[in-house]
Amino acid sequence: SQTIHQWPATLVQPVGSPLSLECTVEGTSNPNLYWYRQAAGRGLQLLFYSVGIGQISSEVPQNLSASRPQDRQFILSSKKLLLSDSGFYLCAWKRDTYEQYFGPGTRLTVT
Amino acid sequence: AQKITQTQPGMFVQEKEAVTLDCTYDTSDPSYGLFWYKQPSSGEMIFLIYQGSYDQQNATEGRYSLNFQKARKSANLVISASQLGDSAMYFCAMREGPDSWGKLQFGAGTQVVVTP
Image 1 (cartoon, chains in turn yellow, brown):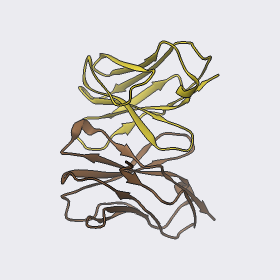
Image 2: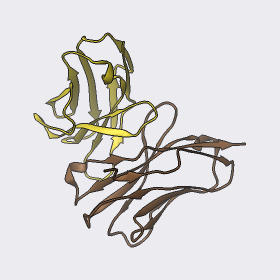
Image 3: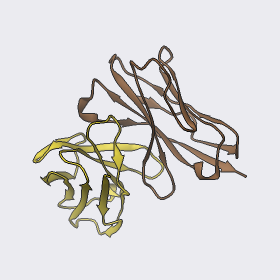
Image 4: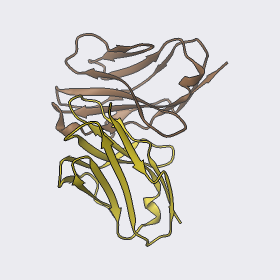
C-alpha cells in the first residue's frame, strides 16, 4: 500500500531564516505531487504541483519554491522566511484516481 | 471569486443522528468533480467521497453520501448515524476540467462537533 511521509512535523523558525520541508511517497511510481498551505481556521491553498521529476508548476507567486529531485520526493523551500509563511503545510499525491491523499503535515511557526 | 462555498462555519450534532453539510460550487466547465475531506484535530486530511459531474447516481461510501444537485450547483455531504469520532473539520473541494493535473480548490470548511 501507499504511504506519504512529511518531516519535520513541527518547526519554529525566525524571520529571515531558510526553510526546507520534505515529502516522500512510498508504494507508487510517477505520482502527481502537491504542496498546500492552510492558514489557521481556513481552507487549503494550493502552492505547487508536479507531474514529474523536475516539473514544477506554481499556483501562487510568493516567497516559496518547490523542487522534485526524485520521482517520489517533493521539497518545499524558502531562502528567507516571512511571518506570513506561518501555517500548516500539507503534501499530497495522486496517481490514477481523482482523489488526492495527504501526508500528516508540517506545522510551521515563523517568529 | 470563491469557487467553493461552505456557509456553515460550525455545527453541533447528537450522536446517532444524521447531519448534512452544505457545499455550493461555481464553475462553467461541464467536466468537474467534487470531493469531501475530513480533517480531525491531528491535521491530516482524510478523503471521504467523490462525485463526478457526469455521474448519474449520487455517490455513497459507508455512512457518507453526497447529495449532488447539479442544477443548483450543490454537493452536500450527509453523514448518517453520527459517531463521536466524526467530530472534525469537513472540507468540500472541486477539480475543474477533465483532470487539470488534479488541482483542487477547497472551501473554508465546516467544524462538526458530535455530542453524546
